[in-house]
Length: 195
Image 1 (cartoon, rainbow, N blue to C red):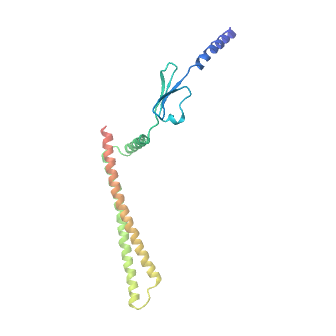
Image 2 (image 1 turned 120 degrees about the vertical axis):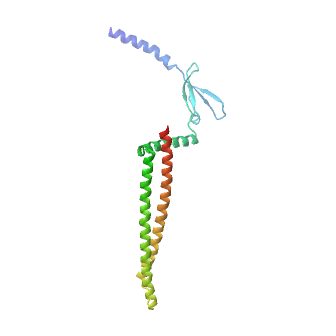
Image 3 (image 1 turned 90 degrees about the horizontal axis):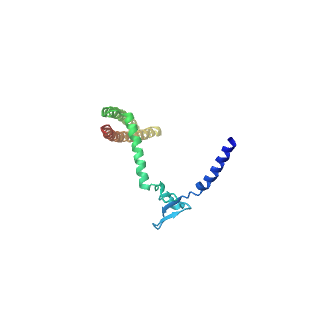
């Protein structure tokens, strides 16, 4: 009984395989001249990016392969993806507009503190430079040559002042940018929570 079944299955399979093998797919695509082409061979590689359709032997579309996105579409998709990731992160950081304002105040206070420290250091360096210049002036009034180490210290104080002024400008720019970023976060959070 088992052998008879096996023989029947083999015969049935033998009859079906040619039918399956003879199922032909046609590929419909548009070539470089804008002409619609039907092919049994497949779509040439240079036309795949434009998209194509796969048809059965009755001419019915069984699959549609869409065109590859253009550079502009890719850019827009990447922007949308980045925006979605940014929105998720924003919603993790803040629940309400008040959370944004509290974070803003903390950040601005931190930057104000850094500006204050840099200003204090700048004043201290100016005072040190004044003292060193007074010492140098005493040497000159006494008709002595100003020692090289004293001149080097004055130069160091001048360079330190330049660095501190640059730091203060950097912190101010950072404060301004942070404030603008918090404004943008606040606006976006309101949009997301109003949805």
